[in-house]
Every structure is written in C-alpha cells, then in structure tokens.
Image (cartoon, rainbow, N blue to C red; front, side, top):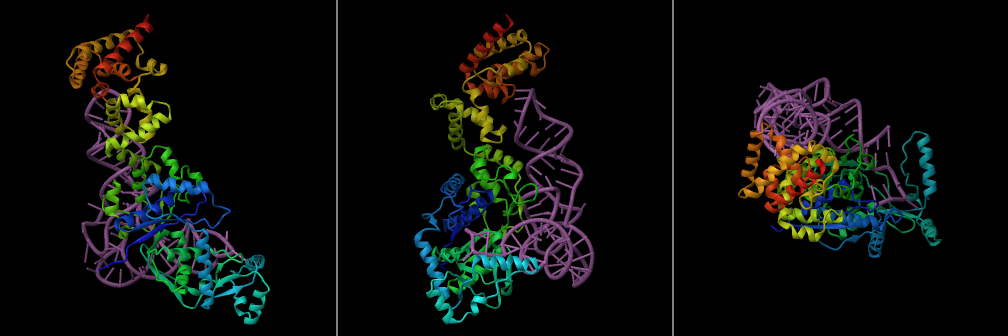
Length: 483
RNA sequence: GGCGGUAUCGUCUAGGGGCCUAGGACACAGCCCUCUCAAGGCUGGAACACGGGUUCGAAUCCCGUUACCGCUACCA
C-alpha cells in the first residue's frame, strides 16, 4: 500500500498582513501535512501586481514563522516568469484541444452589456458570440493583431466533487458561464493560474476557505481540460467577528502579528485557531502542537462559520502560559523586558535564578506575555511608586513597626519562607490585627506592590539577602516619611 | 436576481435515531479557598431557527421556509 505522499499548500495573496482566517487555513494544511508525513508548501499569489507588495509578503512569512508553521520547499511565487510561461502554455493547450476559444469582446463592451442586462433586471451571462465566429475571421483578426482573451467553453453536464468537509457538492454546468482564462495582455486569470500551479506543484489536497467553493467547478473543468488528475478538495468555514460579520479591521486585531504584540503565545494562537472549524471530539480543548498534529483529522472538520472570541483566546493563552516549560517561556520575556527597557540582559543574567522563580510564580496569574513582562521587573529591582506607597502604607509609623519586626524575623530566623510567614501571622494575632494588616505592609516592602504571589512565595523568589535588603530599604524610607 | 453553502447556550463546541429532562469550555452571577492578585473548586442562568414528513422513536435522516454567508470580473 504505497499511498501517494500528501502535498498541500497555503496560497495567500500578499495584499496586507497574515489574517487570522488565512492563518487558520495555513494551520490546517500544516497539521494535515505533518500528520500524514506529507509536505507543506507555500505559494504567494502575487499575480496582481497592483495590490501585492513586498511588505505584505514579508508579513506573511513572519506570521507563519511566528506560528511555527514551517514550509518544506522553496516558496513559489505565482507571478514568476517561468510560471507565467507555463500558464500561457496551459491556456494554449486548452485552446488547441478545442476546449476554449478566442474572444474579441473588449472589457468595455462586456461591461456595457452587463450593465444593460442589469438595468433590464436580467442576469448577464456571456452569450458565446465569439465562439460562433468563422474560423477564417478568427484567423484574420488574430493575424491583424487584434487583442483578445482566451475563454473556456464550459461543456454540458454537471460538475461535482466529494469535499472533505461538505461531502458531495455539484453545480449544473449551465450555471457556469464561459469564463476567461487568459487576458488579452497574455496574463492568466486566477482560476487558470491556480490549477496550473497546483498541477505543477503536484498538490494532492486543495484545502482552503469555503469562499472558494464556487470557484471549484471551474477549476475542476480546467483540470479535466488539461488531462490532469483531480486533487481532493476541502473547504473550511470562514471566521467571523463577534457581530457575526466577516472579520475586518472594525473588529480590532485581525492580523496574527497583532496578537503577537498583545502577548499571545504562538502555540495558544494555533490551539485557538485550530478550534475554529475543527474539533478533536469530546471535551478536548487545550492542546500542544504535538497533540494537535496527532489528533487532527478530517472527520473533525466543521462546516459552520465560527466567531473569533478574543476572551477565550486570552483564557487559552493563560492555560498555555501555565503549562509550558519554564525555560521555553523565559527567552520571550527576556526579549520583551530588554526591548521595553525594563531590564538589561546583563541584569537578567546576573539574577537568573531569581528571575526564573518570579516567572514561575507570576505566570499563573496573568493571561499574556505583556502582563507577565510588566509585573516581573519589581522582583529584579525595586522602585517605589508614590501612589502605591500611600495606599499600602497609609500609616507610616505603624508600617515602620511591622516592617521592623518582619526584618528581624527574616534576618534572625532560619531561612524557611513558610515558617517566616507563619511567624508573621503570629505577629498579627499577638497584636490583635487582621492578617492583612501585617502582610499588606510587608508585601509593599518586599515587592513595592499591593498585589503579588503569597508572602512565603515572595520570600522564596527574593531569597534571604534580598528580602532583608528590601525590608531595610523600607525601614529607611518610612523613617524618613514619619520624621 | 441566479447559483452554492451553513443553521445546538451570547461565543467555541460534544452529539452522527433511543445513552439527551442535550454534555464540556469561554464569558457572566453567586459561593468556597484566601493576606492581596491570580489560579483552582462548587453552584446557577443560558441552546437543538421554523414547518412538514420518514420512523415505534428524531438535535441526529428527507423536503420546504426563514436567516446569515459566499460566488456571480480581462480581482485574487
């Protein structure tokens, strides 16, 4: 049983950035390829020079790389000269086989006729007038250099296929008009270029958004005209915004790069995207990349368009933040801290153990890398924020007393954070104070913040020397404040 | 307009004739835990679009209606 190796491709047109819908399509193709030990290819559909830009192409690469969706062969640029030549050859082959004809109608004429039909409330369909031209007239006009397109002659019958997600779909050919495959300037129309490229790239499974469903019969007709075997087709549902409408800038972040900047983990993004149009079945939701590859299956593919809910994405990110290996998390945070000027690489290196302890304690209480990066620096270097100080130490004299007592405990007791916290609680009890009245000011002294992990955890992060130093710093500050 | 696609809680979904008085998750509310902030645990409200069939029995199968989406270019 030598099954043909799976070859799939993601074929975006570079007209912006990598959209979450495109990312999802890329992800499904990638998962499918990885699971079947197949090949995942990338093709840039840049035949529309006016709309394509180099930055857009780079944005697509960056987005895919960030998500971890690596492609296996050099990128194919649809507009490359050798591809254009092949598109023209294929159009010519179809023409020579008698399955297409030259059409001399100009775009302006066509538009006028279309408008006229519309004003008569009729639906416009090309009337094949050029297909009825006498052969010698065609030859004469071609010889005269009259511009013309090559138009595919749609045969009688019906065109259908078994879609991996929608099962059987069929279109009566009478509903498909004769369509142009090659423009008068010799460049190919999308449907021809796609089919020609997919054949050349030996694509076995064409998997894309379901907005391509109605292109599919035309493409199948082209495969048949070119005598090429059909690939398997799969059409994934669209992704919408919270209002049920197609995702657009109005919905806020729609590019994967936006989420990268928001502090979303790539594996969380993939996990969340995977659930837009696919389900592993049962209650399974949070998955690593490896699990997704193992679990991915065409039988779990959904038909219904889904709504992109950033709240759930954030939750999902929190789940991944908490479960991923700590040493995989650190580099990203380091980069952010350095980039934001919150810490230097040298500083992080010098305090590496403390840094990792803080990272580990903090990561279950945040939902994004940004939050994590903003909460972390205080464990590296303490800076008082006057507003926070006022709230955490409303009574400087009382705070000074508590801080002094804490300082003595930390400095003289055996280094055992839970035991020290217990001793602090005993202090509260002996003074008939609420536990918070004692731990609050201590927290402020230790972290410069009103919220943090538990006190014993904070002591553990800082270590004895740093804890003592910070309590001393607080005493000095409070002495100055109450004097 | 024509053609095609889709239809389970607000959202992501489980479900593929009896296991469903429809399960899980996000969000929301309450409670518990608790020194703070999270995390976690528990509880609650919340859905099979509508109408016909098929069947002993339909969320599940068929048809129609409605709604939404897509395509309908010498765009991709």
